[in-house]
Image 1 (cartoon, one colour):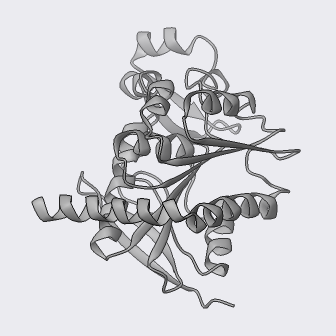
Image 2 (cartoon, helix red, strand yellow):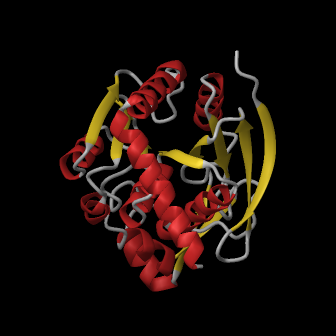
Image 3 (cartoon, helix red, strand yellow):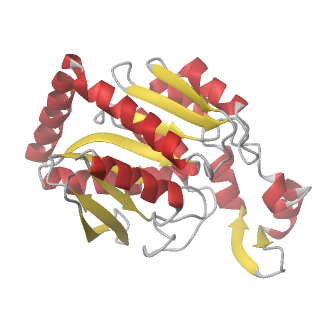
Length: 278
């Protein structure tokens, strides 16, 4: 069995904030980066499950907190998809400096949207895995913000979201709401390079993001595979092993392809070229 050492790593993003993550170090040059979802953190079960499963296969993994979440610096903001894609960019560049090959980026829920946005802007990671991402970002807001949220936010400039006990959780500003509403998932999907292999995984019993959203990703991403896990909820509560198996099988199959090794080398050469120019 592969020996795995967990190391705490701090990476500064482009806004000068420290991002905190855990590296599951196996000694492999390959590295998979794992991104959490909305109001979540690197300790959530799917993130830990995936990093642990990858480590057992001898693949190093890094799970981290986006700015304003978990242990990372910064303020929590609603929306924020593009800025979280920038955080992911900072993480990728950090490990490239350490001579690591970024084999795949994996995101759960909102993190699924973030890895796809990243791939639409930077054609430098050959495998992208979107777990339970939301295609229609205009949906799913009423449940959190209440009815008539657009009217109320225009009137007051913000909405304070409280939990079931009435305790304040976070503030949604008009700017952060518009950030979400102007993030164009369809356009991002169409921009992903055809050489990038994308897997979308979704639970058939997901009550937070409907499984039909997964079908939309399949429509607009060129090199795409869709896997529905029957009976799984949004967090894959009773389907952690199946989730890990689907992710691992996709990564291993792609890595075993001869064209993939060329693509990884191409990504590395492109990254080295950019680094040399800076």
